[in-house]
Image (cartoon, helix red, strand yellow):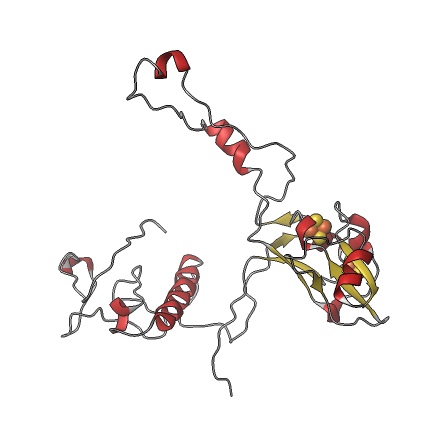
Length: 250
Ligand code: SF4
Ligand code: SF4
């Protein structure tokens, strides 16, 4: 995305869009759109919300945004944007190869980096001087490497699991446990790494072939993807998001 323009208003009004750009409007001054893809007559411009099809509720606006985002992704991938995924399609495994992920999953043990300040002798003499100097590129990179990749989720598909326990073996934080099911508070204490933060749900699978369940202490997960690399059946996967939209199906 190059530009995000935040705006509020009471009416559609696009006098600022130059007609030579290739974006055409109808007699109501609404952009002419494909109602499935939300693509305008300019193939790289998409509309959503009230600006797209006139006033409606916020749920509809969000749905437009989902569809437009999907179109943009397909367009960026040089795919046909009119071919839409089925409802409840999982779009995005982050796996690119056996040991390759589309995100940086190295674990950084660094403490939070302090933003450098200008020398006090200078800032006290000049009150207009900026105190925080900001990160230089090197520090900024080191700080971003501390990211825990919370937007990448560990997704477990119980039908695929053969209960080999290889993921338990490799997990650096011992957050995966295969055990018999039980009442939640008692189960929390029985996990390899007890899940003591009651505000954080534990991730529990359906009952597996041997009668055990998989339970994961979410607080400890580093989103490193080692479980998904190790798993011989892809029962573990690292996924960025689900395309999970309510639609009537035949
Ligand atoms: S992503 Fe890493 S820390 Fe999280 S469950 Fe898998 S192996 Fe363990
Ligand atoms: S490595 Fe995969 S198949 Fe083996 S126990 Fe873990 S999730 Fe199940």
